[in-house]
Image 1 (cartoon, one colour):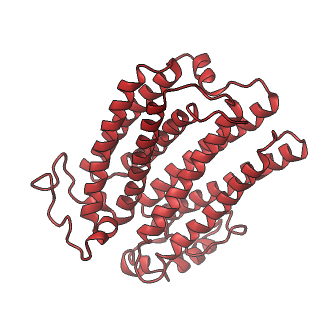
Image 2 (cartoon, one colour):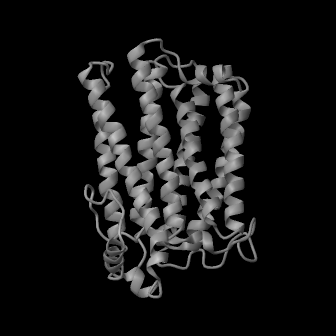
Length: 351
């Protein structure tokens, strides 16, 4: 696609204030996407519990001297992860996992700065379009809540077992993706104030597909939290058949869907097949829509194929850091694509 066509897909308004704030929010969307991928890499490198305290201000800089590193390592040695899993770890090895978590937290701080400073500038210069101040304040509140939720997640792995709660991890990732989608939606509302006319049935189909995608994202987070990707590393079968052994081994039955790694991986696979089927129907129905909707549907179709490929390869390779991170990032990108598709079909209203 030509650059001009890509810009036309996103930018519609000529208003300089709407453009300025919209471009800023697109940048914020991109950096939150990066944060999601860095968070995935931090988890896959098992680095998330390397920092056992939370210092939002004083923890900005990493240890700078050998004495500082010894102090930080001594703190880590009090954690269950060190005692139960890494008791033979050296300071140099500790640095490898520390930098991942420190980088993840530093990026979180930068996201806060990149949001608060421009927001204050646009506000003082009266450049925020009418109706958008409350929305931007809500986004700011959500961002602060995400930082607190991240520490709440880490705390769960610092008590008895060297593993964070898969429920808290799911909540942390889900909120990050919600914030990313909300930033993107708000940016689009600024840059594309006029909706694109579309078919009502197609719009309903788009929302159903989006719901399935959200389900997939939640299940993917549970897979990550339970490390369910490290079992049944074959495809399309799970073990010796399509239905794996131990699928509903927990009592009560409902608990399997949240706490049984076998069931969670199975559900994530089924969700992928269901999502692919709905996206195929979406593409077929999209051929009768206008070019913008048709093009977005096709992009979604290609994205789902790539995402499924990433997931299958990651599974077969027992989830290496590179493939696992790419798969998590791919899920986030799919969410952005379908957010765009929903946005251009939204109901006409005052922007």
